[in-house]
Length: 492
Image 1 (tube, rainbow, N blue to C red):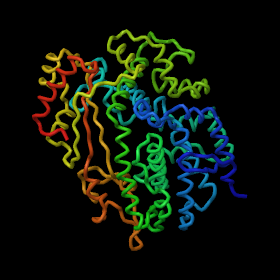
Image 2: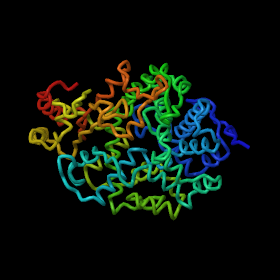
Image 3: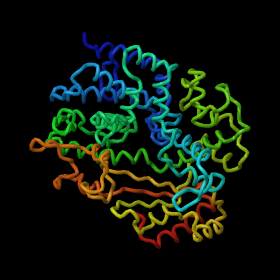
C-alpha cells in the first residue's frame, strides 16, 4: 500500500492546495516544528516592508511541496532513484525539516551564535582579514560575518533531528526512516547521492524557488513573478551523468528566475533593514555576554551553542520558545550599562534606524576594484583619514560600521571562467540543460545571459553610524567622508 500524500490538505497563499502525509502532519503538529511560526523568514525586514511577516513555518511547507513536484516530474522522466514511494517521502521530510534548526531572528541569530563561538574558542588575532576584538569598534564587529562553525543552524537542525529525546526524531524513527540520513540530505552532506544536493542546495532548488515566490508576495515587490511551474514542467534527468537537468526551451524562464533572485536582494539587503539587523546583532551578542543579566521567565538567557545543546538535552520545552519572541522578551527586560548599547536598545525598540553615511555599489569582475567601494570595504574605518574625520565630527569610532553585501548569479566564483578553477561541489550546483542527449552547464552557453553575468560580483558597501538624524554630527561626518571617498571615483 502506497503512502497517501494527501492525507490532509493545507491551503497556502503561494502554492494553493498542498497535500501532506500522516507522518508529515504529525511532525508539523509538534511544538518543535510549530515554533517556526514565530521565526520570520526575512528577519527584521518587516520593520521596512510591513507585509513581510511570513514565517519559516510556511516556507518549510512550501519547500516540501516543491520538492514533491520535482520528484513527481523526475519519476515521469524515468529517474530510477526516485521511483520508490519511500524515497519521495524521505526527500519531502528533508525539505520540510531543512530549516528546523533556525535561531531566533533566523540568519541574524545564527550570526550572533557564530560570533560568540568565535570569541570564546578562537584566539583574537587582529589582521587585515579579521575584525578588531569585540571590545573595540562595537558596530564594526557586528558587521563581520562568520561563515562556518559548530553553531551553524544546520548543526542545530541535525542536533534536533538526531537527538533520542526529540519528538521529531521519535516520529521519524517510528516510521522507519533514518533521521541522520535526512539531516545529511538537508545539509548537503549525502555524497553518495549527489542529485539530492541538486534538489536541496543548487542555483535552482526547491528552497530558492519557494523563498523567491514567497518573499516577493509578502514584501509587496514584483521580482518574484517567475513561472516556476513552467520551469518544473521542463525538469528532466540525464541517466548517463545522473544530473538533474532542464529542457532548452526553459532557458529564458530560468534566466528570469536567476535575475529575479538577484533583484530580490533589494529587499533582503535593503539599507534600512541591514541597519536594524546590525543593531539587533550587537544587542543580542551583548545580552548573551552580560554575566549579570539572568532575568526571564524562560530562565537565564543562553550564552552559547553549547548552552542551547545542554538545554535541549534536559528540557525540550525550551526549544518551543526559542524563536523571535525569545529575543524581544529578553531585550525588553535587559538594562545595559554601556551608553552606546543603551542608545541602540532604545532606538531598535523605537524603530529608529542607523544613519547611512555613505553607500558605494559596484558590479565588477575584478576582486579588488579601485573605487570608493574597495576603499570603504577594506579597512577605511581604521585609516588615518577616517580617524581625523571622526575627530572633526565628534563621533566615537564605536558608533561606526561598514557593512558589505555580495551576491552571485550562479554557483561559480565571479571573474572565473566556468570551465576553470571551479570546484566539483559548485559545478554540481550549476543549472544543467539537456542538449543533444548530454547534460551541459547553462553557464557554458554563449547565447545565455547567465554566462557573462556569472563572472560579475554585484557588491555594495555602506558606512553606518549611530548618530541622530539631521544632527550636526551627521552633517559633519557625511561631509568629511564624502570628501575622502569621492576622490577614489564614482560611488556607483
